[in-house]
Length: 390
Image (cartoon, rainbow, N blue to C red; front, side):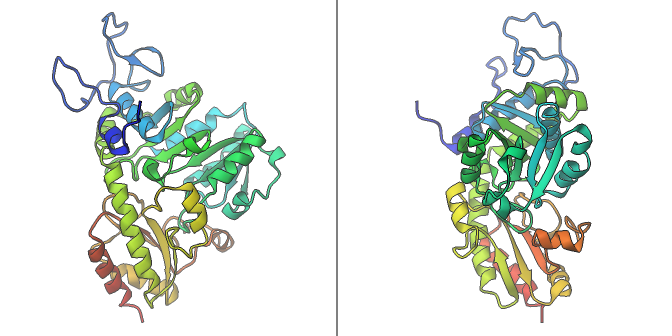
């Protein structure tokens, strides 16, 4: 049977429809607790417990519906939703304690993930070594030392692209578990599980929801998630039903939105590349970007994230930011609105000068999450802000 298209699955997968009520969309089961034992013959089963629902920290029908929708788009047999992206990451990594001993990761991680890896996991016996994306892509490390490899499909804010295809082949040869945070790609542009990755994680706060008004995280896999479920249940990182409803609503338009993000970002990257006030642009959709060929092999679209350097150093970057009106100066990403930020003042402010150099973060660098506005309006906005520079 032919698989339904992405947008069809985004709209219809996981939906709970009850003929008794005739509801078109999944209801919000705003329940802390449920009848238990439930003797109804047609009771719904919580897939995590294989029993009827009992308590929403364990599971909830609205959350289950969302997890099924996400799993359909990600191509996962098992999936789990969390209250935040960090709840997803910490629950997954904590579930590996006692089974794995050493992790290889990249330096260019989301800051909170890197802090958790460096400062917390070793205390539980899961030690982490850090290398650059380029070192990981070159497979320039001793595979015999590692049980797990953790990376991000596209890094922040320098937009480096992980060669998943190459890494997976190598990891399977050496029986290394692979985990990829594919937040920047979204399931529309990339499905790491289909490429052989063992676990994929997402901050659903970004593209999956797409409206900058909820927080969530997801883990997807083709294996069991029982240990991850126990971590979620014990540490309490469960999503609530109303948030799940909003995220599922946002997810229905994921394909439409990311298609526009991809298109706009390509147009904006080419526009910035030709601007005399811009020193350089990082975007894998540019033919001369150093990760372009890797992105072509590993992604279906080049995404909505880019970064660029402006003239006049930090003063120029801050002046540019003050010149923005349509584009908001704010952290986070993946929403329908365009957002700009200076990593030196936000996400990478606490890093040492040496560490910023390692991850290619400079004082004059601007990160741009390109929204779904009309591209011509975005070009005018950026051009006006750049013209404020000398």
